[in-house]
Image 1 (spheres, rainbow, N blue to C red):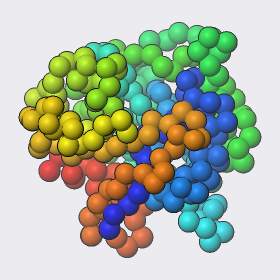
Image 2 (tube, one colour):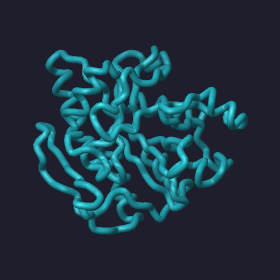
Image 3 (cartoon, rainbow, N blue to C red):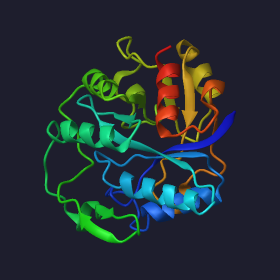
Length: 251
């Protein structure tokens, strides 16, 4: 089964995202784009994932076909690049967030400079604003973050490795041998073939292409095709999808 996916979407909780990137707007736009699976991956927090999951469940109960919502987070490691974390359920994502929050720079957010960090409920009502800037670095290394995410049942994917900033390649010059994963994210501006042509040593990796959407028009249409293993085909959910990513990344 080939699933249409976009696994890198920022809600209005990320200071760099548009304020209309509410959980409901994201899920509805993804449904209009016929996406099967999406991930909410805000900087340093998973606080809007529960609302998105509730909206997914409500739409499904109404007989509609919303995308499966994967709990996620975009992290910045001590080396200065971004990693995507995906979790099997909301509880594990929030438990990891508690750890991440204790190991990152704490600075008050300045909404007039960095942007608002908005928290919504499942009715898309604004219920709060996160006070501390989320787009800051962790004190933990990429290896430490990866091990911690794995301990919560999640999986880590280096973000937009083709970019000239905040990417593993731009920071380290190569994929370090101690990184245990086999999945790498690229932006829509390149392809797996182009990356392998430029970096032949990457031919053993699996590439996924996501939107890194910060506004509604950026959400992938139609999304990248992910080949979902046959043994998960009956009634799969977020947990099954993340387990599949773990199996492919650490096979």
